Image 1 (cartoon, rainbow, N blue to C red):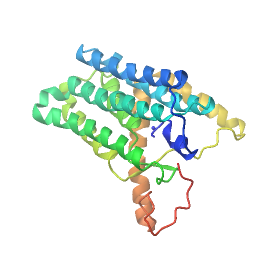
Image 2: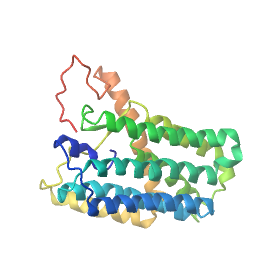
Image 3: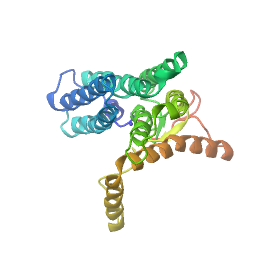
Image 4: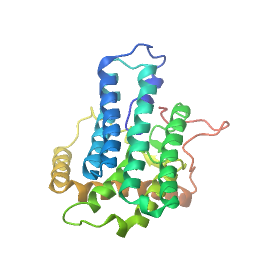
Length: 267
C-alpha cells in the first residue's frame, strides 16, 4: 500500500535507469497534489473534500508504479519521488486533517497523537526502502501508509456523513486512539497481507468477476459507510495473522535472520 506502489518490484529487476520519465511521475505528482490539496481543505474546515483527496491520492499512488512497469520507465528518481509524495499524502495530510477536525480540542495530547501518526508514516516509509530486498513479498512489515491514511480519513468521512453527523467533540478520544493506533501499527513488525502474490493475468471463474462487480456496487451505495469498515478489517487483520502464527509456533517475523534462508519470493 509498498504499500500499494512501485519500488518493490522495481529493485528486484536490477539496476534502474537514472532518467526522469514523464508518465509515471505525472501520476506521482497528481498524488502529491491531492495530499497538498487535502491539507489546504483541512485548514479551511472542508473535511469532506480533504478526505476524498487522500483517497484519490491512494488511487494515483497505486497507478504510478504499475504504469512505470508497463512502460518500462522505472527509475531511482521515481522511487524517491514516490516516497516523498507518500509522506505528504499519507503522512502529513491525514495527521493534519484529523488534528483540525477533532484533535485540536485535546490540546497537547491532540497534537502529540497527530505527530505520532506523522512520525510513524515517515519511519514506515524509510524502513520500507531499506528492507525492500529482504522482506517477504507476500506481506508488508507493518500497516501500509495508504491503508493507515484510509483508516484515519475514512473515520472522518463516516462521522461527517449526513446520516450519522456526529460532532467531532463527541469522538475526539476515538480519533486520538485511531491516530495513535495507525501510527504505531505502521512501525510495528505485524505482517499485513500485500496481495502481491495474486496473479491478475491468470484466468478466474466467472463468479469472481461477478463478486468484483458486486463489491463495486456495494461501495457505490454509500462509500463513507462501506470503505471505513473495510480498512478497519484490514487494519486488524495483521494482528490476527500475528496471533495465528504465534499460536501455531510459526515464525512471526517476515524478515529472515542471517542464519535462516529466505524461501519466499523477494520483493
